[in-house]
Length: 566
Ligand SMILES: Cc1cc2nc3c(=O)[nH]c(=O)nc-3n(C[C@H](O)[C@H](O)[C@H](O)COP(=O)(O)OP(=O)(O)OC[C@H]3O[C@@H](n4cnc5c(N)ncnc54)[C@H](O)[C@@H]3O)c2cc1C
View 1 (cartoon, helix red, strand yellow):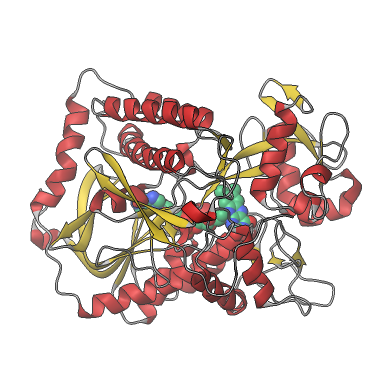
View 2 (cartoon, rainbow, N blue to C red):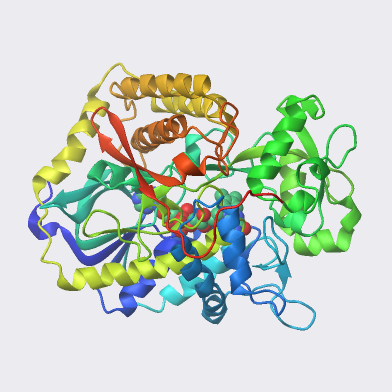
């Protein structure tokens, strides 16, 4: 048992070292706080580094912040909070310029200005990029900047639970994966920046580490999760692996064709074709395949993404990673052959509900990045807006957490907090018989794929809910067979599967309750958007019986809801 004298203490603890976490940490350090960053991965291995296509900012002469705001409001299918979207888009230009000053090397236009590419749902080409590895370029830029500051890094430490006492968050309990021990870190304020939880699904573009631990820990602690039913499927992922083929490929002029050789997007989005919003393109592909106009193969139905007409030079200079991924993971050469693609889970619009400064309903708890829901993406996120979100709201959360820590009392953290995590883990390890965490994970992912996918209906969602709850019950008998201490992946699997199950239950229940179609949430039994009944955010609170749903209004400033057509 850890004694108080050994306990780690900091003013601000940031959990997660992707773009959101690092930007939050930098802001809190600049505000004069003693900051610790806790990360289960090396910071440069964070999923932000996998982002390919780019980051949005209306920097072009013909473009404007107003258009960026409008596109984001429309893209969100009017569920995004307009005050948040306005703030977000105004911060875009300064944020990108700041990243360049931090050392991020962006691709350039021939005149030396920042190069921009077209992205779906955007009125102008406003996606700034570093070839097709923008996330890595940003992550390296901020990591170099953060490296000039003093802070403590707990690397390979995995957040398991938040410590809440007297109604305030006062620290965290984490697993030190290198030693296999659970540790407490006391904090005056905590920022959750643990990123995506796409691993709720099997076919996903998200890294294996994207298990939503921070969102689940916040949910356990009493934080409200917002709009969790809105799950984005990216239209173009490789078949077997779900590896992403960036929207930048269509932005550079790539086209989609079905097995009849038709450029089918002309039926679904006659004006902007392949550059319609992601939900629109994903549904179009699923419909083409379901109606027999797709190709079929050992990994299911698919359509073709053609780049060949762009020519070798453009493909090799702007889409280098896509060339590599296609060759290595699909065995095809996109310079001479079409790429077989089908949608895969890509992004979670929902997350821990926050205000514009990253504050949650729990005093002392802040959140930013994909783990949070401000909400600017509403029912559907536009490509290029998420990297921007991590930086804009990461900074705000860091400032707010630093401010809060300035007046918060010394945190009270006791042995009982540690025991609440250690006791169940001991029980998992002492079982001689029980459920294997990886089997539960596979069954959960298959359930979500089958019953809570791109098209949804009441019967499927009810069946999905029943199955998720059955898996949740089986998790009560989970067994960790591996008794080793050092990097016990069997143990981390059990922790992470527990988190995925909790989050899956919120997604299914929210989707079942929302009897309309909006953005990425497409109900075949309720095909229309219903502003009268559903222009509101879903909020989920954890109870022992499951999620308790309530609803809050959407904030409107200047844009009245219209039908969303592309
Ligand atoms: C393949 C791919 C391509 C994308 N391309 C684009 C794009 O071109 N443009 C765009 O705008 N968006 C893109 N996105 C979305 C965008 O990249 C992400 O939403 C964003 O980078 C998330 O950043 P983050 O800081 O919130 O989380 P991450 O970068 O995922 O960082 C999460 C951090 O939390 C840590 N962590 C997680 N769990 C724990 C735990 N239990 N304890 C301690 N630490 C923990 C991890 O170690 C990591 O450091 C893409 C996403 C994917 C998956």
